[in-house]
Image 1 (cartoon, one colour):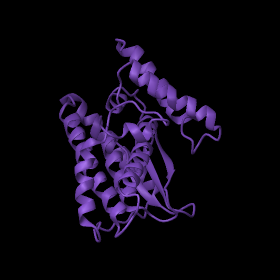
Image 2 (tube, rainbow, N blue to C red):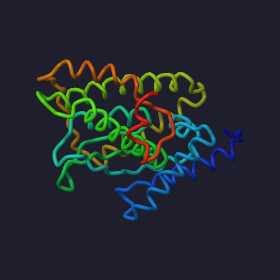
Image 3 (cartoon, helix red, strand yellow):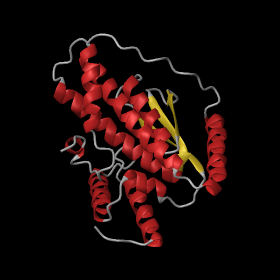
Image 4 (cartoon, rainbow, N blue to C red):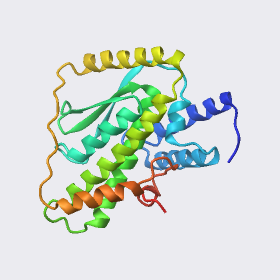
Length: 241
């Protein structure tokens, strides 16, 4: 671990965020370049002992809002992935919405460019982690066990992210809170301009193997939420050692 001052840290964070975008295989058709970029992200985060919360806290001042569209893993909405997107977006000062604008189901994340890069990168990591854990726990998906397990995982992950978010909110200096509120209002205006017909989602219902849901809630405590990650180790790194 190397000690770094504020300006150097900001520059490193800028570099990591750019690498995150380059390492996104959905947006970078060069898979080898994307893999190298993802590996470099993990290397830099480990070298300078940075986690996702620190990336967010050390972000440069840049309140230009944008939208990033993320493909779902199915043509139709996957309820636990949608719920995961909601939790992550909230923790990283973004707003998500389910959309079928381009045909299949997708999730649109709105926020500042810096917040978006981190939120989307983190979402895709946890999306893969949750799926891998479910396949490992329930290789034979009977009586909605895998789906319920994922819902339990996401519920616990969401609660943990909410706790992290609350602590960060409490640490905001009083003289900065007006700026934070202004940013939130700006994001809300941008979001409604992009998606004027927002509808409230339906409440999630659990049926089938309820025990799988409770097991997911328990195992959700093992998911790492701050360790540096890479594509190659995504499935392993999701579980606490």
